[in-house]
Amino acid sequence: ADSSVRTTGKSSMLAFARDELASHSRSYERLLKQRVRSLITDWCGADDVFDCDGRLCLQNLRLFIENEEYNLDSASFKTQESEERLEVEIIGPVRTSQIFIEVGQDKCDAAVTLQMAEAMSWKST
Image (cartoon, rainbow, N blue to C red; front, top):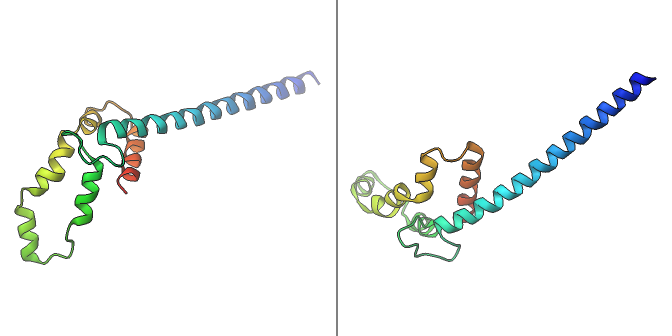
């Protein structure tokens, strides 16, 4: 009888610990999402901001992609490929953006990087 009480006590302690860990995990997830959204807004512009003072501006990227012609033949593809416009309007701002520099220096783990990518994706749709 004494061992069954100990087993029940251990089980309830394990259940309590598991519930506490799950609660902390959910709290961390919520905090991470909130902080990432704030960070993306700070570094990549708000939803209605199109002038980001040299920072990566997701709204400008979205507009660029929306306004592109995607039905290209081989001649127009070669012309598009040789234009500097892609470097100036897309590649350059991404390459020099603070957010990509930080991620590129491994300053955050994979879960944070994934959250950032998701937030940027939602923000630019």
